[in-house]
Every structure is written in structure tokens, then in C-alpha cells.
Length: 221
Image 1 (cartoon, rainbow, N blue to C red):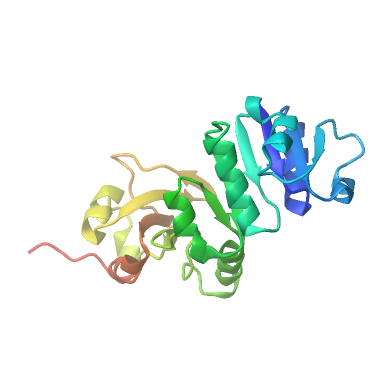
Image 2 (tube, rainbow, N blue to C red; image 1 turned 180 degrees about the horizontal axis):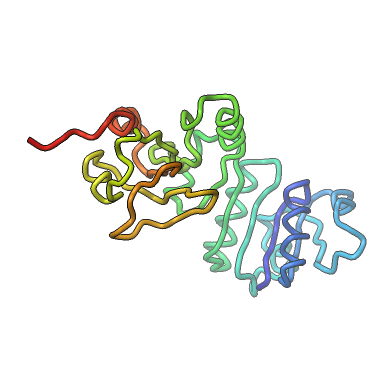
């Protein structure tokens, strides 16, 4: 594949090296030619000086044959504008833009531009490390309405089919972490001792789900 990257900062240069090491061709754009000094001496990709929303710059970077476009410059506006140009003008379907302001994420999602909200992601990772286990989600969508989260399961649920647990808690199990390995949910998957259950749910429903699963299952009359 050929991938075009806008922004030769730490993220852009690291991504360029990873992609090249994986066998892809890469072109990287930055308005500051000094930024290309972050690239290793043996980097074989194209270095294009300019801005990623300039059509001539994008053409020079090979956007017309690109399978993906990544905008990771330091400017939210530049990233989203260039991503839209790549998609709407040059027809690149696989685009992603980094943003620092998570309040804009919902707007960008409505425009069909996948985003990585750097500040919110970093804050979530820090909170996961300083908060009680399971208190912070592993992932949330850019709008902040859907989360993937660990949940604490009462020992009384051990031996219960995960599908039955889902029905009781009115939630959807994404997977189980079992002895350090992710296990997908099948019809016969049951909760075992030591399992760490992960659910995907609306964030505003997590308090209810945690409360249900932290207690013993209710017995049928």
C-alpha cells in the first residue's frame, strides 16, 4: 500500500518508520523542511514540503495512488481540512485525523472523518492507571457515548454462561480476558474464576451494569 502522512513530528515520523518496515511505501508532508530530520537516514519514502490541504502538494506525495491518508500535524484545523481534501477531492476512503480538542470529535465524525482525540485518550490512559481497577474505560468513541470497559463480576457468576449474564445485566460482552489471553464469546462460554469481563455499552449505563454484576445473580422464584 501507499500511505500519505501529513506532519513529520514524533507521531508522524514514528508511523512512517513503522509503515515502511511493514513493507508499505510512504510519503510524508510537512511545511517545515527541518522536520524531516526526525526521519532515519535510511528512510526511502518521499519527503514533500508544504501543507497537506494543497492539491499540488498532495499530488506530489502520490495521493492519487494512496490507499490511506493520515493527518497528524499539530493543528486540528489543518488535519481535518486536509483529511477532507484527501477523501472528497482525491477519493481516498481510508483517512484519519488527529485532534487535540475532543469537543470537535462529534462534528468530524458526522463528516465521515475518523479521528483520534489525543488529549482525551491520554487522559483516559492516565486515569486508568491511578483509579481503581475498572473505574475508567479502556476505550470510548469520539463522541464519548459508547465505552469498552472492564467490569467486576461477583464470584457467584462463576459457572454462568456469558450469554445469560448479558441478559441479566442487559449489556453486551465484548470478550473475556482469561489468563492474559482474550477469549471471544461463544454460545457455550461460561464465566471462570479469574476471568476479566469486558463489556461495550453506553457510558451513562455503566453504573447500572457495574451494580448488577458486582452483586450475586438474582435467583428465579
